[in-house]
Length: 299
Image (cartoon, rainbow, N blue to C red; front, side, top):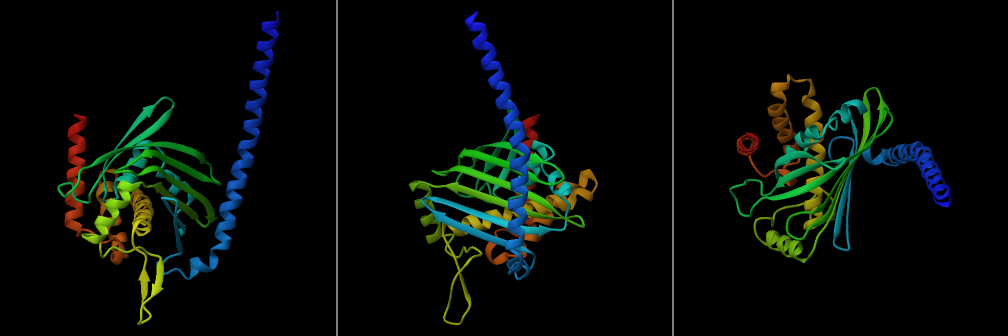
């Protein structure tokens, strides 16, 4: 009977561990809410004086071959509206697709989890370089009226990039407004570093980020360049994709995709010095071609 007693002990231990996890989950969520609210209070002065012309703060860092950036922003949307972007893996794909370097996104299941396979590549698929498929695991860690947290992770990306992480958090501010945090980070190896250096010496030599590195002799801002600047451009592009996605929710379903594409482009043009790559017609041609290709592949 010793084996039966041991089995009961294991079963009871499992129940106790599960109960402890359930008890800790609300505490963890409450701590995350408090942390995001504290960040909102901490950033008040910077949000009010933001150079973005909106209550938005961008921070970025680069260390040990890893870059990361965070957008902290007040938005004129309720937390329910923000959460609508993540109501399904298909909706998340539609949001990510607005980025000009994302040429496709296909949701699927892997075990009990959701996977988004992104096709990423140059802004124009007929340009130099091919596309690359990235598999992001999608987790909705919290989706309550008090706190939203979504995590996307990918093990590898183009060239020698790896350990991609996208995090979206939001808490309500009242009056149908929310405080949103969007974080984006990845690691890069030697191949990616060399590719970036070659890009900066040629087509990317005029590319800048948003962080002011110094001032020139005339007192004008000198913006950062390199891998960190590229990261800043992309985290802002994803943030603007979130806004464009939500803004079109009140459109008839058949008009939403086009409205989101046009809205995303218009939002990025507000920061043309950093984000302009194509004119509107070229961007729409690329996206329509991507959508047609995806439709043909599913037939």
